[in-house]
Image (cartoon, rainbow, N blue to C red; front, side, top):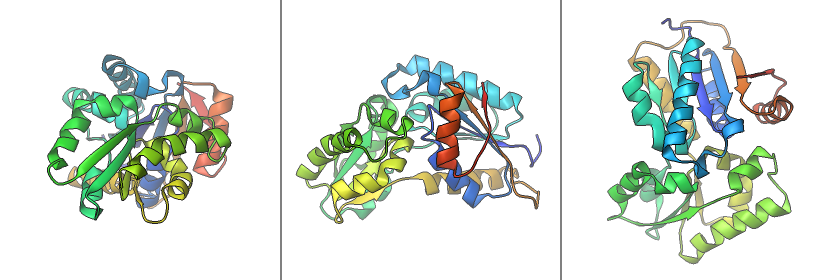
Length: 262
């Protein structure tokens, strides 16, 4: 293991690119490996055992590419598999979780909402997180089937996506939430639409910047920050259709990149 080994990042699809982008901005000298496990998406409707199996497979893939740390850029995979990953591998494993804590500190109505996948909201990890703050605020949860698939289709601003966002956000507004937590990394790409429907008085909380800071902290703690003065490189893999993956990743990464099959 050397400081200039890459950071591995994975998600069930392209949602984790929202996290990867923040890590790239915070740590521009780090080499990044990104895996979109699109052939097995959505994780949010899969069993915990299935998600653990995929997470272990991807971790082995990244370790074979000499990853010095792994960021599980998926709320569902973090909730289901991160304990298993940390027990199995000695490198830093950084996960994500819905930003309930900042929402609790920001609320004035005492009611916050969480948009997430069905599996994330069912997980013991999320329910333990929510229970830690349930004496302070009311937490209204909203599963969002179909929303991740709209992001995968790059349908950020069409009628179906808007209808789904309204279907999921309006019940939260009816219960007077003033903070909405995005509990899936895919939803970051729908922030403009969610903000539009929620209105100016509702704060939308996304944790991608916090994850980048935590990645930096963990690497510094383990003396694994890159020592290179050169700009880092990025490599991308997908388990799905490569023609689709290339279109998705080039658009969201903001430049032409190659995508390989895993």
